[in-house]
Structures are given as C-alpha cells and as structure tokens.
Image (cartoon, rainbow, N blue to C red):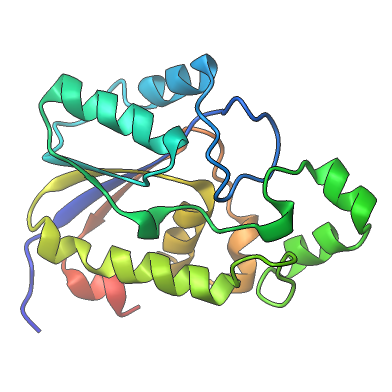
Length: 194
C-alpha cells in the first residue's frame, strides 16, 4: 500500500436548525440564523483550507457553499456524509418518540446497534457508508487541509472509528451544534485500518 502525504481534516457539525430540537436525519431542515453564526464562530481561527467537502443536506450545504465561495475554494458534495436516516423518528422530538413508545428511545441510546428506530437505516449500514467515503479522502486530497461540513452522527462514526471504540458507544460521544474536530492523519492506514 502506497503511503499518502499527511492529510488534515477539520470536521464541522452543522449549527442549530429551524426545525428545533428534533431527530434530523434525511429531513432537510435549513439552518437558523443562530446556527449559521455558530458555524462561522467555530471557524474564526480556521487555517487556510484547500477544499470544502459537505453533506448535500441544506443544514450543511448552505454554509459550505457560502464559505467556499467567500474563500475561493473548490466545493464537493458527497451524499455518503449525510446523517443517518432515522426512519419514523425523523423530524420527531424525544418527547414525541417517548409518547409513542416509552422504552424505544432509551433502548436506542443504550445500544444503537441492536435497537434501530422503526424503518431507519441500520447503524452498521450507516457506519459502512460513512467509512467508505472517509477512506477515500487521502487519495482525493493528498497532503491537503480539508473542511468537512457534516452531521453529528457522521462525526461520531468517524471519531468512534479513530478512537477504536465499540460502535455501541457511539452516542456517548458529545458532538454539539457547530462542534469542530481537527484531525491530522499521517497515512491512509489511519483512516481505514484501525
């Protein structure tokens, strides 16, 4: 396996949305004004990026497009960096989910691998999709510094993978709105083979 030059990837979660405090998977809710400000503030001391990569969902794409345009950067969208599809929970608040099935949400938070929301994307499929895209980054952006604008679930999948944590610990990782994680990867084995 050829060793690629070091790649730097800054993971930025979208900010608050106009949908409020609900489970947002494929529901395409736009950012609120506050959410846009949260993301801009997270990048106050940002380095000079070579490219911006984004989920195509509006809560990521709108900011990514504005940022790339303002800084004269190439922008690429990759649907594999979209949030998990929460099925019947998509667009619902925790209170609404609990009202429909009192134990379902608790089970999901305790073991998201075993307790998939109704009609949702299985967590193992979500993980496979995200990590397939993640592993391609060294070849796509060798030696570059990339901003990846994405979702909380996507970031948790990547962080769990890099920290070699079991997937059922995914939801114990705190990734608030506009969270920024800077990752430097020496070579592609760190992206794929841990």
